[in-house]
Image 1 (spheres, rainbow, N blue to C red):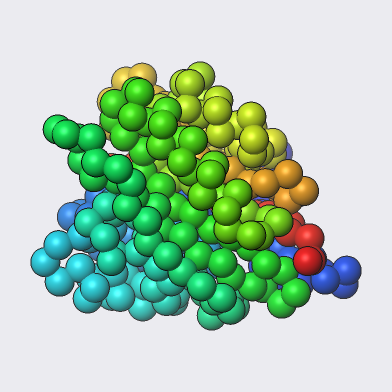
Image 2 (cartoon, rainbow, N blue to C red):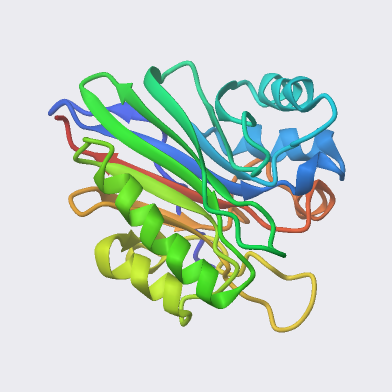
Length: 251
């Protein structure tokens, strides 16, 4: 029986490009099994982690720092607003700048935002953005446009963005992002597809996107990743994570 190939490890290529592992994960404010959550993240060996629903209120800094430490990472950005997205990174990344962005508030809706950063891996520069888009269709579509505008204004050729989109690939906002960016899962399917499996129908509502010119080596739910167990995935949070390996050209 054929086995699923493993995603490439992080490395710098002879031509100066970098293989970067990126994980997107809605962690439900760390209200579940935080040890299982840390084990999943650590086993995925990411260079960058795009979090949604990071702790936002009581002792949020301490909780986020504890998760980063337990995963062998450091806190990069996020938490300075009440919006929820955050970024973690490995010590392989050199941080150029970070910014947390609050989006316009729609009355009656949850306040949304972006966690953003520009980092370097050797001679490779990457813009990073984590998002959690609205449950409301029209507001979500507008936020998709703000996401694209924010990426365009980062002044970096290569970017990776992702998070909980609250809709699948057939949705209007998902398609809007896919017109300007590459949907990593569609480009190089690997592992599992659906990120929401708590009820029917199972859906892919969490995704990673990259700018044109970034090569996607594989992307999906890390069901085949060594060290990631179904028990930990079920205990860690109500979403499943998305893991991608990317080859990013040197500047």
